[in-house]
Length: 164
Image (tube, rainbow, N blue to C red):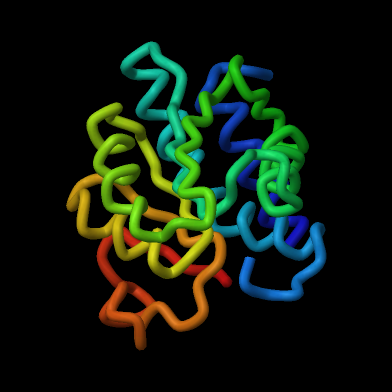
């Protein structure tokens, strides 16, 4: 996995012109999220360079703040790849604060912001994101059974990606 992350990191640097429902540990969760985001971030970086803008990642979370172990591991993994929040990427958080009924409203808000990528941390958040857009890629940082939940038809489903 570290070889793949290194390759993604080199691709990101090149394209930019530079020479919880589980008991997974913080590093494991970070690795899962990085694996899912690696290729998408490389594509976003290339696209953003063409637009001369910083890629924006919309985060739809069941948490009430960004300082949860999952999101801290996520940001640490991005830093390890050389992606500094506010400099190379912008993270747009939307917190459901334990109220899953808010996911639809919050997903629609992120879509209106025209984020380049959506990241979710709950199956119900991924479902709301999928219902809100047909064009923005969705990464499910945590999802029990995406096929059984109707989020993807198969492992190679539409723009929804699951690694957890």
